[in-house]
Length: 193
Image (tube, rainbow, N blue to C red; front, side, top):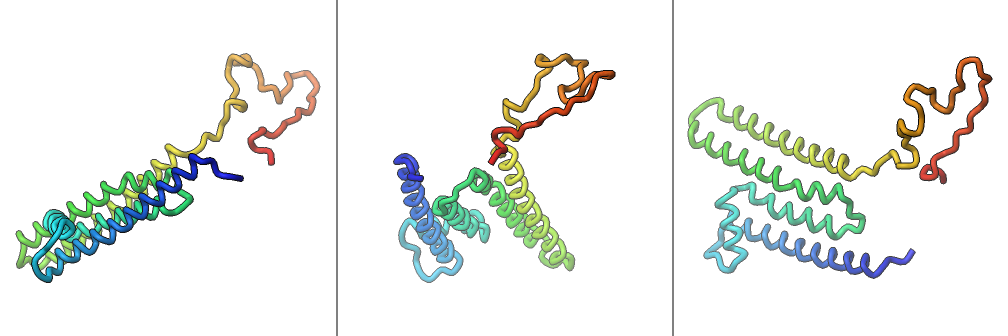
């Protein structure tokens, strides 16, 4: 089948936007790496963005280029689905969870520097944050499936109470005392091959 012009234009825009996001992801990764491992004076907007991200979010700032990379892959892969779009739209919530966990860990390390249980507490906070992030993505996938799943019951197969008496037996059964006649069931037109 030949693709319509509208689908070709949308696909072309998707590829262009995906390529732009891929390049932005690579540039932002280098900028954040430049903030983590400084090698001189920062020059340019990319270095400033890297320092701003790293100073605000710490190591969680590496998740921003990951988010851009995920968005680029979603746009570049031809089989785009609503489920992938829903996961992409839900990605800021796990990022904020990771950033909050990192900020909590930094606060714990500053307040309890000599505590012997600090490594255990830190591992617990990190494990809890990781479980929360996985649960957030699973919840996003469940919601995506719920909102984008096609309806399994079509209007042709539904039966209303107005079509039959509420106390009557379904049409497949006969009344007591009458002879049972076989009833033919035909497949729904949507289910036929």
